[in-house]
Image (cartoon, rainbow, N blue to C red; front, top):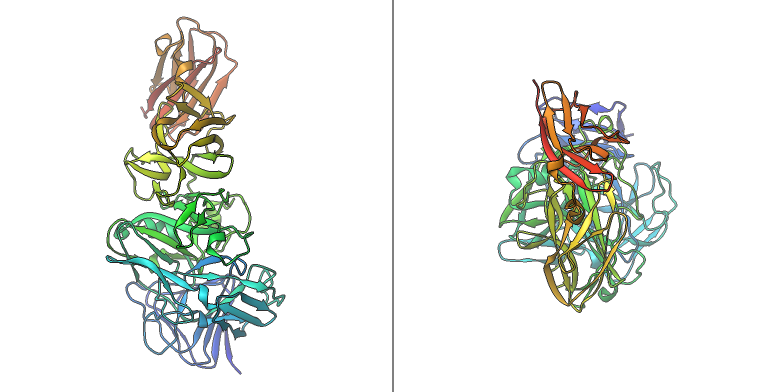
Amino acid sequence: MKRLILILIGLLSFGAHGQLYVSNNSYMYNKGKVVYVGGNVELNGANSALYLRNEGQLVQGTAGSSANKGIGKLSVFQEGTVNNFSYNYWCSPVGNASAAAGNEDFGVTMLNVPTTTTASAPATMITSDSDGQSSAGSLGISTYWIWKFLSSLTYAQWFQSGSSTNISAGQGFTMKGTAGTDATNVGETALNNPGSAQRYDFRGKPNDGDITVNVGANNYTLTGNPYPSAMHVNAFLLDPANSACTGVAYYWEQNKTVNSHVLLAYQGGYGTYSPVSLVSNGIYVPATFNTYNIDGTLNATGVSSGLLIERKYAPIGQGFMVKGSSGGSITLKNSYRLFNKEGTFSQFEKTSNGSPSSATAAEIGGTVETIPQVRLNTIMNNEFTSQLALAFVMEATDQVDRGIDAKSPVEESVPNQVYFVLDNDRYVIQGLPFNVNKRIPLGIKSAEGGTFKFDASMVLNFDENQPVYIYDAQDGLYHDVKNDTYEVTVPAGVTASRFEMTFTNEALSSGTHSASNFTIFQNNQDHLLTISNPKRVEIASVKLFDLNGKLLFDRSNLEVLEQYSFSTNGLSEAAYLVQVITKDNHKVNQKVIITAK
């Protein structure tokens, strides 16, 4: 009988130089907790195993190259989210198991279907370009759809892996899902496959240590989380040592209602994730479901997927693209690994629209920083839709900021596009400190001309009362897109200097009530914001914002006085924006500095 080591506590530590050794005919079973090993893992015999169940995870603390070894196997589950016609992007947490130390290559022949809590049946390889299959105790994988996308100084292209064991640690791969269902219950939160959600059992030597991936300048590389634990995507993307990539990740999304293997019928695209900072929950702009030509090039833009997916932590098996900023390599490290269950700022993928996680900092063991932002949705010719995210980040500049500003994943040849104009290029995410007087240029490309509708009603962690306008230089007017849509006809070609996003309607602000009517002064000695109103103008409200756009107070229904004073006691030392709005809707904005005295 096999000997059992059962993990009953949430954290198993073997010290900074500890090792985990599981002898032959023994196994370790971890249910929903974390196994932490300071050194290497050795699964010594053919019948030794480490089972990670119910989102149990293995975290290792070694630096440098992996020393894991043994012909025994780690077994960990992950569920796909697509049917037999659609792709998920994967990155395996295991490789071939052998007595040699170090990470080894992976192939889909290492995938299994669970039959009990610990037992699994090997997947059957289907060698034609047909459907993967799922049934009770049986899994068929169509190897035709197994591809990896690699870049170097000389190439960037798809390579078909099929059933070969040639997917190196850290390399991502594509795999379509399965037809059929599998009602087997192995004690997880769902059945093996209730439909379009196939459970895969990855069995092999656990990946560990530094894992290097090549990148090419201006080219994409398919990589992902290569470990049997969650990975801090922000830490990976923002690591200065990984400056060979742009600090942005791109995630494949596909329209799962299109049931076809024919490329011309595909509808899909890449969602864009900017991490912003280590503690930020980041910014994710969903993909636009584009169509494709028979040679694989993009044909036309389609509708936005509208998905809201948590990307801060990559769950086990998650694959994604990165883009090279120069030729070279990037490195995945143990220091990025952590124990984090899916649903807490971590989702493999989603099958429907959703809301961002409501997890607290305490639940994930750290600080959470939300990013104020405005989402600009554009409908083109009542057919195509796209989304841009304008994020308010104190540290951002007017230049391109790595890990904040994100280039559009859509090819330049696509006929209909809307984008931020930044550094003479096309961006879908732009970060700036909030400034009510800021003007953000928008670019439009329309192959044949047509109707564009702008809508900025979606705001996140931002003042709901702050207006958002599209300024159209052609008519010289400001169009409210926060409470309404602005529909305009655009000629064929590229329009790069006509439209701007703004937060102040200067046509209204240029009335009789100028800033000279008021004196706005911060009295730091007495912790008071003072507004002098010698002409006794009727004031509707006085608002105070921080420079991220967060509304700190709003004083309305004010008497007509020659002077107003508002307490600023308790506010941090920083710059703030004061906005005075008169009864006839004219606005005066002024920055003040609060300091301690």
